[in-house]
Image 1 (cartoon, rainbow, N blue to C red):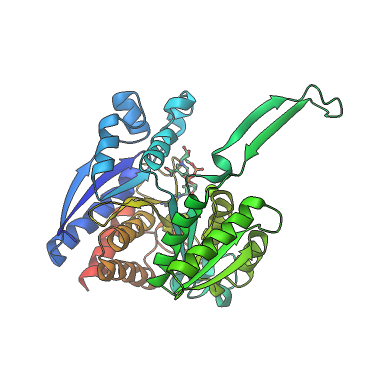
Image 2: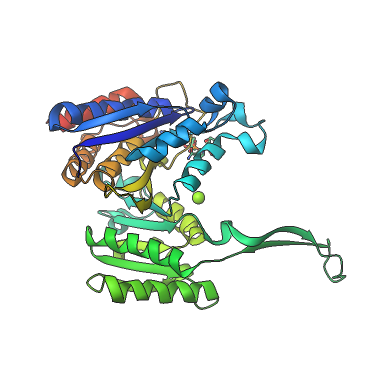
Length: 373
Ligand code: NAI
Ligand code: MG
């Protein structure tokens, strides 16, 4: 891999810029102490871009995103922008990035840090040590399939209300194979186990899903352990015994729901990173967008209360998946674990026993100090 890493930073709105400032400290630390060379560009997305350009993502920003190794995004949106027309809402900036970069594999880790196990909705003994990765197909399926819409159903007098709402679950074999490959690749670098979830018992698209995942497994990844599960059983297993899984691969709709459920097994929204990956580029790196799962948190914006860990862990994913710096990613995650074990807490991580929370920048500084140690 080349020795310079290009990164486009899009802080966005609300707490986005606050948590991103702490990521910039971490990037600077790796440059100064680990001999990494980042070419970092900053730009606008969401409401911030709308205020400056009248659109939630300028064409020039889109072009930059296509050219870099990785995009790191904070969060978009806020009450100030709720009145805007749908076409220029802050979220549209994010959707445009995902769509034009064709980011078909959404990675949502659910990892339980020991110091936070009591924050889980499940018992400590069920979640302690949990480390799973949900791979959600992000660019197809029922959210995009045609036909769709709300139509009148006039010639059906039996239908009270007279309307019909339609969405279509549609997957091509190619769409399934490419996200399956992503899941098998990721599994090889982890616990070497993939569980594929669909509803092949009641959906033809689920039958195709199962056949294509099996095809990719048999022809390209026979060394990885593959199992299949109906998605409803998967939901039960995730809350019953989540540690049985390593990598879960599933479609857009099931992945949306299952990844949110899995996230809550691990505690606060302020802790959850994500990555969205697309096709591998000629330089060997995938198209990639990294972002925390949380939004712009207008209720705490500007108060130095935001937890920067979700955004910092998103950068750790960039180190691992875009830059091939797995050891550095491990080191950064260990620094986060260490800080939490030492009892450093932003306000969102305060338990009933109370204590004094640290600010956003104090949390960033504590993580830097743990990297030094
Ligand atoms: P949210 O994730 O912004 O906030 C939900 C709750 O979690 C709030 O009480 C917030 O204070 C807290 N929270 C979130 N992140 C935190 C952090 N890092 N540290 C401490 N506490 C944190 O979701 P909400 O309130 O539904 O949406 C607020 C705005 O964000 C809306 O405009 C929404 O459209 C947008 N949004 C943007 C997303 C994105 O950029 N990917 C995702 C979700 C929402
Ligand atoms: Mg969701």
